[in-house]
Amino acid sequence: MITDKLKKGYLLIAEPTIIGDLSFNRSVILLADYNQEGSVGFIINKPLKYTIHDLIPDIDARFKIYNGGPVEQDNLYFIHNIPDLIPNSIEISNGIYWGGDFESTKELINKGAINNDNIRFFLGYTGWNENQLENEMESHSWIITVNSYENKIIGKSATHFWKEQIMELGGEYLIWSNAPENPYLN
Image (cartoon, rainbow, N blue to C red; front, side, top):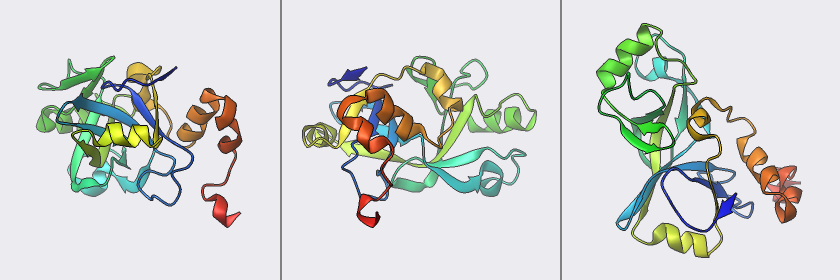
């Protein structure tokens, strides 16, 4: 469902016309926080070549790391759907939580109590200052949709996620679903 009202927990789908923007071309962003002072989100469909073990060797797991956005890319963030296991988590919406006690999280991963369907790690985040996201909405940079996957979005494959979202929109967007990533190179 397309909506024009911003709300944390919603998805921002990059308009097909955002071409050449390395961070946001074909991005789907989970809006993690939205208020009068600004917004924060995580790009959920841009896996990097790293695993959590590559970044933190004492974690014995190979969970993918995602490019969360261009802000603070030297910081690790995570979302999850297991607040009963990870203390001090902040609910985004629909059973999706942001952060929490990282030492507990490491222990739970190493014990095998957390899997790929429970947690997703990001380097960096996407951030907007006051009214910046609204201005981008007015310039048609983003399509807002309700997160129909709710907390199952964490385990959703990123491979064709943008294309799937564009196809669900239908109508004028269908032509973009099979277009090359950079139509100028076609």
